[in-house]
Picture 1 (spheres, rainbow, N blue to C red):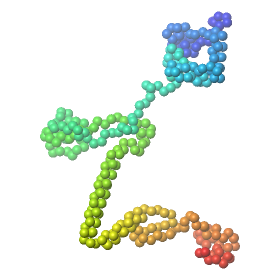
Picture 2: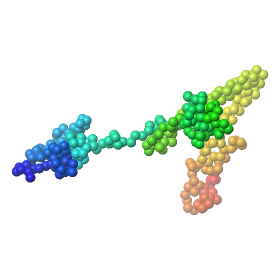
Picture 3: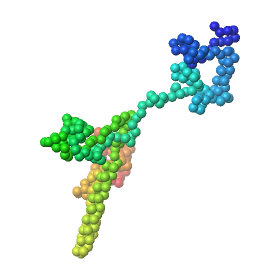
Picture 4: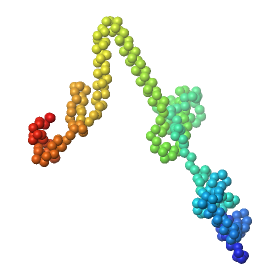
Amino acid sequence: MASAGVIDFRDPQAGVDGGGVGGVGGGVGGEEPKKLTREDWRKKKELEEQRKLGNAPAEVDEEGRDINPHIPQYISSVPWYVDPSKRPTLKHQRPQPERQYEFTDCSQWFHRGVNTQSVATKFRKGACGNCGATTHKKKDCMERPRRVGAQHTGADIAPDEFAQPTLAFDFDGKRDRWNGYDPSEHSRIVHEYAKIDSAKRQLKAQKLQEELASGNLESVVHEKDNSGDEDEDKYADDVDMPGTNFDSKRRITVRNLRIREDTAKYLRNLDPNSAYYDPKTRSMRENPYSNMGKTEEE
């Protein structure tokens, strides 16, 4: 029992029921649990109230961060099995580095192709008996079966495949549609088309020089005018405009639907005794302007 005038306010961080692990003995490491007098308890509570009101500086942890005084004690107090020193900290509430998952960066991907930097010149022990690569066995070989394998001939040894890394992507990395995309592949296609375009221009310039040398200038000008029409017709079928139907072969535009800006026919004359509009067939047989002396086109 506590003596007169002293209340046994045991620190919850000191141990279970004032004891160590399992409540036996003193505090952690054999030290006695703390006992606070009424005066110390009152001062502690007053300091907490002053910190909540902002009149006293906040408590600082071991890393120099301020501890919010409004955090409840059951959150801010460090368990005895985490930190026996009982220093003020919130480190136990933050993610622990040793328990965090490490994900692969999105810039990493599987290696493509084979390793052409180092190619063997003779058969190596333990390699594939068919192609001679050391990264797989004969039963896993994807090359066409040879009549006499590289194990017996020692010639035409296939290069080794790359050792593929183990990738562990996060939620977004697994669902990234551009993950593993190589821009150099697209740049190679762009360069091929650029070469084709430059070759076409050279042929066109050469043809123009030949036509000018032969004196057929009018035919050259006529072909130049027609080339613009061909470019227009090239993309004519892809045009999807509401209310139009363009046929590049006949070069005509057909209006098969009214445009949305046109006033509906049943709204031209709001008189209920005027021309009848059938909503089922969406047709108005009579002229809505008959009582005004106008034609339907006006």
